[in-house]
Amino acid sequence: MASTIKDVAKYAGVGVGTVSRVLNGSSLVSNETREKVRTAIRDLDYVPNTFARRLSLGKTLTIGVIAPWFTRPSVVERLRGIEQVLADTQYDLNIFNIETIERRKRCFADIVRYGKVDGLLVVSIIPNEEEAKKLKEANITTVQIDARGYFFSQVAIDDINGGMDATNHLIAKGHKNIGFISDYFSSNSLGNNSQEHRFIGYKQALEAIGLPIRSEYIRQCPHSREMARQNAHEFFALPDPPTAVFAASDTQAFGVMEAAQERGLQIPKDLSVIGYDDIEISAYLNLTTIRQPLLETGIQGTELLLRILASGSDVIEKIILPTDVIERGTTGPPRNLNIEN
Image 1 (spheres, helix red, strand yellow):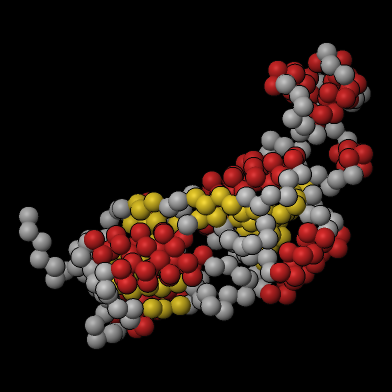
Image 2 (tube, one colour):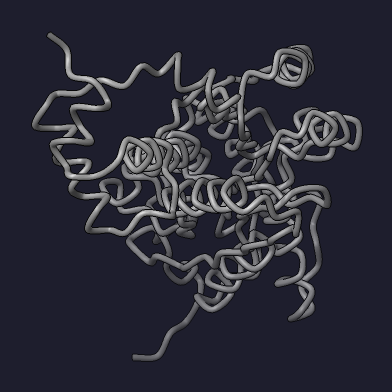
C-alpha cells in the first residue's frame, strides 16, 4: 500500500502541515526539520499527488523557459544551470524553443492565454513592450537571462566589456588589422543584442587607440561554423587582409580557423583568432576565447526567479556578470612584427 502524507508526518515526528510546507519549498521550516521530512519521504518511498497539490495551491508548479536555438552550445549550458537549480525544487520545467518570429509570437501568447507557468525564464531574448505588458497583466513572474531590457529582472553578461577585452587582447599582441565576424544583429528579429554589444566593444577598443573602423573587416552572417568559414575566406581575399579575427562566438571562430587551414595559413603565426563563450570544445581545439559564465547565468537567473516568486517583490534586479580572457594557442603577434627578445 502506498504511503500517505500522514505516514510521512508520523515517521518524521512532525505535523502534516510541516510536511506540506517542505513539499512546497517553504522557507518557514528549519534545515533540521526539512532533512527529517526528506528522509521520511525517501525511506517511505512517498510519491506526492502532484495534481492535488497543484489544485490546492492554485499553481501549475511549472517554470517555463523560452529560449532560441536551444541546440547551440551556449544555450545548452544555460539550460543546464536552470535544470540544476530546479532539480531540487517542487517545480517542473517546460521549455519553449523559438526559431522564428511566428513561433515567438505563439509561445508568448500561449503562455499568457493558458497560464501554463508560475514563473518564466526568457533566455537570450528581450521581450518587447507588448509582450512584457501581457506577461505583467497575467501576473507571470519573469526573469531574463543573457539579455538586457527595461521590464524585468535579469542576469546578463557585460558583452561590451567582453568585446573590448577580446579586441584589446589582439591589440596587445601587436595587431592593427583586426577583423570582426558575427551574427546579423541590426535585423535580429528575435531581439537578442549580445553580439551587437560585442561589436560595440570591438569598435570602442579600436577607437581608443586611434585605429579606423574598416568596413571591409566586418562580416555578419547567419550563425554557423560553415557561414563563418565562407566569410573568413572573403577576409583572406582582400588586398590587405586582417592579421587577426575576433569571432563573436566560438562556433564562428572554428569556421575562421577552418578557412585559415584551407588557405594554408598557420595559426597564430599567420593569423590570430579569438572567440567568445568558452564552450567545452574550445579547450580541446586550443582556442583563445572570452569566457562568459554560461552555466552560472542559468543558475543565478533561476535562483533570482525563485526568490521573486517566494517574496512577491516587484523590484527589478539587474545582475551583470563579468567575462574573462582565456588565452590559449590561437593568438600571437602578427608575422611582420619585430619583437625583441
